[in-house]
Length: 141
Image (cartoon, rainbow, N blue to C red):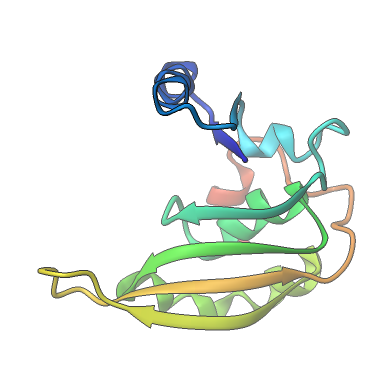
């Protein structure tokens, strides 16, 4: 398992936790937009999870280029965020993804319902994606 964040301060903290727990995982510091364009990290993982980091279409553009065809992206979302899932058709088509499952759940003592959205990577992501830093969030697919 690889834990990724764009901030070295956070990945260093994760490394301390990994070492203290005796876990077999590593960290990677970098922006998804950059790692998704790097041949060393592009389409290398079987799966990726994201927790409400951005609009769903943006998460798709950040995440799918990192996953190999046949792999899965799982996005944790609040009920409010799931409203944009239906607007993601174009992004899914361009980025070679397909929603295969949605699971609703709730956490104890919280009134806000949550969802897991499972996206299967159906083919190779076009080389023009992800777009350079900032473009995906300014103009989602």
